[in-house]
Length: 116
Figure 1 (cartoon, helix red, strand yellow):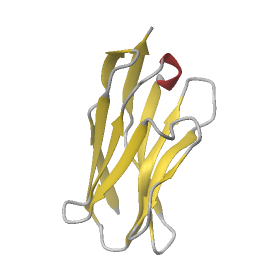
Figure 2 (cartoon, one colour; figure 1 turned 30 degrees about the vertical axis):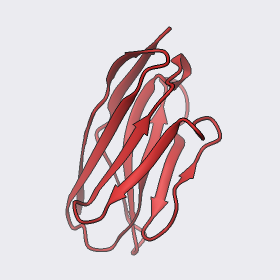
Figure 3 (cartoon, rainbow, N blue to C red; figure 1 turned 90 degrees about the horizontal axis):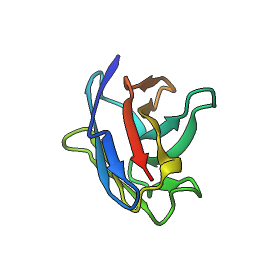
């Protein structure tokens, strides 16, 4: 079983930046995809960015050019650098991993609030 610990959420003004981190522990052997989703109350959880082992990041159109996803395999950690934040980026951000066996895990969520 994989455990995920997220950090880095908070309140920022529009145009500002935040960096989210997610560290994986436990049964980390076989982690393939790592990334982030986000959810606004009353709406479906949506993809922000993901990266497969040895691959390039995949971004949603809404964050492309503003967010940067990176992965440190030695630390089993994934980072999301969020620049030029907009009020519509306000959401709970969830870390996500998918293993080569097809099992997945979610973090507890971290709130990101962007004020206008």
